Each structure stands twice: as C-alpha cells, then as structure tokens.
Image (tube, rainbow, N blue to C red; front, side, top):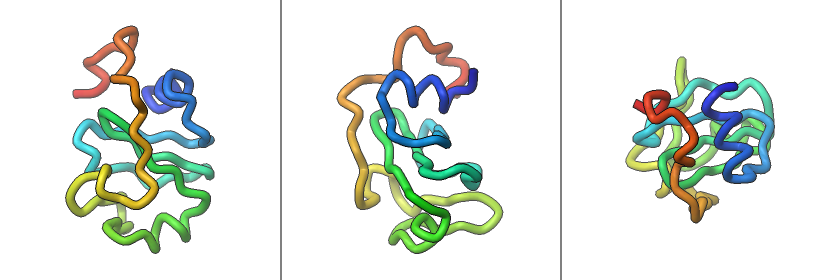
Length: 93
C-alpha cells in the first residue's frame, strides 16, 4: 500500500489519487482525479488537472511544484491529525 493510500484512509481524504511530500513543495503529476496533494499536516483536493494547473501558487511542468508551502494554497484542509504513527516514517523521509 502506498503512502498516499494510507493517508487517504487515515485522514478520510475525498480523492482517488493521493500524493504526499514531506515539505509540501514537490509532487508527481496526478493521473487520477479527484486528486489530493498532502504535506505533514493537511491536503488540497483538485477535481481535475486543469484546476491544478490554474491554481495560484502551483506550476505544473514535469512535476508539480508549489511556490512556498502547500498550506498557503486555497482550499488547504488541515487534517486535525498528525501523520499516523502506524505508518512507517521512513516512507516520509
């Protein structure tokens, strides 16, 4: 099970594709939507690649790059829960 799938379940993220980056600044381009980009404390859900590409503070080229922090992106949802302890932290480093 991938990290994204584990977070989707642990945080009840309403997305099919879930992508994690510890610093919330660099992601693979989602291929399944709705998709969520996650950092250590929360996430943003996007309904389509077009929405992702047109979101202020995000650039999409070969990867998805966040200018600043993910938490600064409109629609950011703070999970209210830390990264689940049962997850192997080595996956997040």
